[in-house]
Length: 190
Image 1 (tube, rainbow, N blue to C red):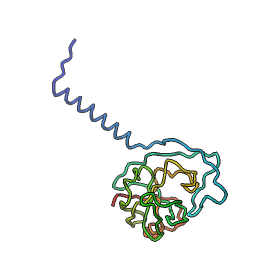
Image 2: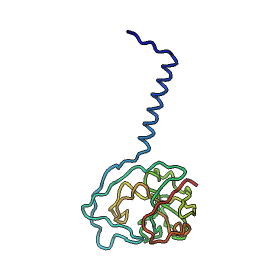
Image 3: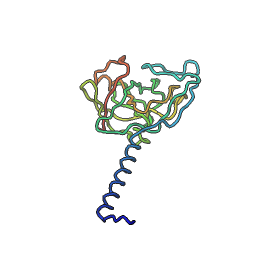
Image 4: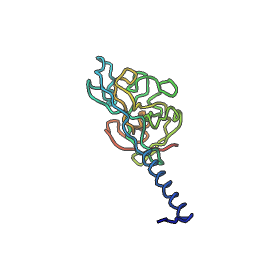
């Protein structure tokens, strides 16, 4: 028994298969799965900066790492964290993009590793939305989602994969109190 398939039917079936494969790849790319875990080490005495409610690594605790972040859209949902980019602040060393420290009065941010995208976001402005307000801020650093619990990262755990780590100037412009705790924001490329 032979089944005859018309040229139009074959093209339609081929088109549908390509469409399904494309959708599957898109869905797979849109997910961001953990890339590993690191075991925390106890920071040397007095070496973990707890400014802005920063967390210090705990001996033996496992921390999830990510090489990716959720997909960027016109309104990318994120968790904001407060960071001091000044020398001696809880941001640790100088910023990744320019090897400099930045004033708390300047609207600057660090993005999680996937969004930072191997420095491709360096010195680009993003717009952050919260409390019915918005502010533009320059990306100057990476909030490393792949490693932590070492001197370079101020003995803090790896960042989650969905963080916009912002200076006090950003929080002030959005009218967010420094003791707000965890809340959601949205951001987009400016």
